[in-house]
Image 1: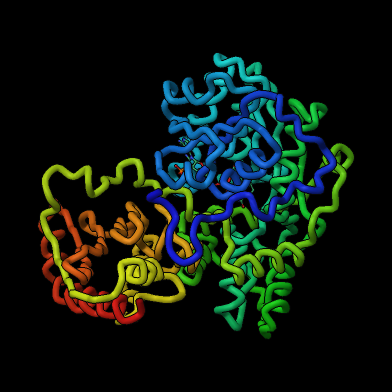
Image 2 (image 1 turned 60 degrees about the horizontal axis):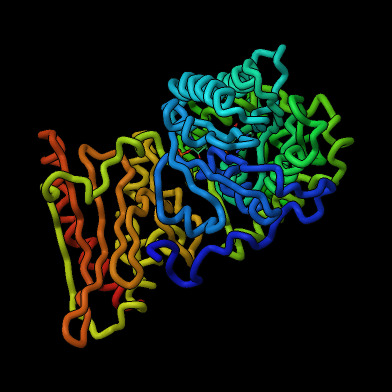
Length: 505
Ligand SMILES: NC(=O)c1ccc[n+]([C@@H]2O[C@H](COP(=O)([O-])OP(=O)(O)OC[C@H]3O[C@@H](n4cnc5c(N)ncnc54)[C@H](OP(=O)(O)O)[C@@H]3O)[C@@H](O)[C@H]2O)c1
């Protein structure tokens, strides 16, 4: 199966389920359950829980990938864009309950709100037409009376739009979600790791009630199994109410780092978010929305859910410890970077190009090493392992990309030992993966063109030819200049890279 490869084999999707101690009972005869945003951070963890509880699940994704079938072999996969009503009609056909987990944060602060509202309107209308019985939506916490950030306001407006129709909507409202791979967790952890002096601006002294991803999943599944929650709104939160400074202090204590916190009277949120994006793997579009959210107090006002679904949510410290141990064990199931960047829909796949890519640069070597060993070595590139040689050049390219508000190289990778189509590797994304034969990466950094990096292994007699090829396509004059300026560096980098891959395999 052209899906998950490398050292540890396929991602074990149904291990470590969160809902085992949920007080509600599974109701597998309920009918078909649609999970929208299945490729996202929350949706990707909800699907296996529902499958494990015996539900018929249809997972909605925007782009087909063989990885989805491999991850959830018992789920039906539907490819649909919520901005296309015809797609939604297909996705919602025969659905009993639909989870609404669609969010376009990666479109950036200027565009996500309008896209999210339109998607909600389309979804409400399509759900009504399809005779859906229930919608369950996970939105953001925030006092409607307060001057909310654009991000939190938009989350509330999505709830309002969904509820305008005749299908009852259960709304769960959460503050920041803590778990391995969550953007908030990675930002807090990285800032604590990298900064000795942490500035706390006045707008970040509000209280927040973070919630562990496992508790979010329990609430999402619990409301499905509790009819009394139909059509109602609930606040969900963890066991602690903390300031951001307290959250960072807890992480510093766990990491055994002495950190100094300095309260500063003012600091521009945009500037802070920009610096935060340079210091952490999370791009500026997300850090800005999350940091703007710090200016609001996000604490549960309503405790009704605790009566309907009585279980003890984790404390912040427990949630962090669990996230850290998942990372240590290299078992991060979903990550904020799993959702596609805004350009994805327009992203041209290498095989979709008319004719061959205009520019290519290739390096090859003949080796007696076996294809599986070579392929395992190829699949280790990037992330904490680095690029085996000339690492500073890759890091520099990543930093330049971050300064230009690109994704940068700090995104790393979800897992050190396994790789799947659509996984992120620093500023690349896996476009194709054919075990023991080929790994194709598509560039997501800022470029005056489109670029791919391909690794191939081809048998030749009793040996193998290991090659790396950079493909580049541009239509601009500057794009051509860019190619020729970087060509000598590319030649050095790629030649050394395959030598190292061969050596390490
Ligand atoms: N993560 C948190 O810390 C947090 C905290 C509180 C509340 N929430 C809420 O939880 C929900 C899910 O969040 P998340 O963190 O899982 O988000 P996420 O990782 O950014 O995922 C968003 C999902 O929405 C999909 N999507 C975006 N535009 C779409 C469109 N036009 N049509 C179909 N699908 C589309 C994305 O698909 P692609 O992969 O194709 O882009 C992706 O699967 C959101 O409502 C969010 O407000 C999250």
